[in-house]
Image (cartoon, rainbow, N blue to C red):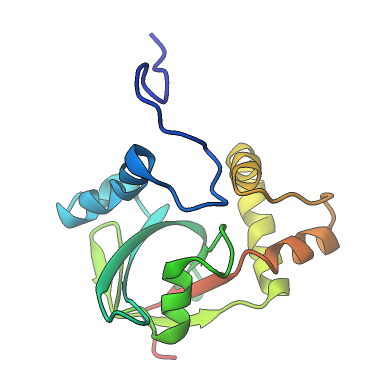
Length: 171
């Protein structure tokens, strides 16, 4: 039997990521952090990571789970994308102060971080598209992004989708 998602009778609202999620949809999106909290991060492998960061104005500690766009095995970097743009709270918090901790699977470390320029972000997203074509199309559509399929179009698009790289190597 195929599972219907969202479950019958539960309204998650719009699948549009251009606005902050509310209600049950917000709870669904935040649920992966509990897997990390309960030492079950290994369930997600290295496809998702948990960013521990501090609010830029409040000083409050936050945890945000994001999908890994690319894991560069040569450098050890994990690259993530702010698909909702540079205004995402977690991204703005990282601009104000580096991430306090990163967790991938059940491994946690204090990272070095760097922000990718649009050209490198475009190259990383191209690799992501090749590895996960259907997911890439769905995510772009849900976040209100599209491009003509060209390298220049991808670079223009990724300038609105900033990326951050984390590593456990000193900067």
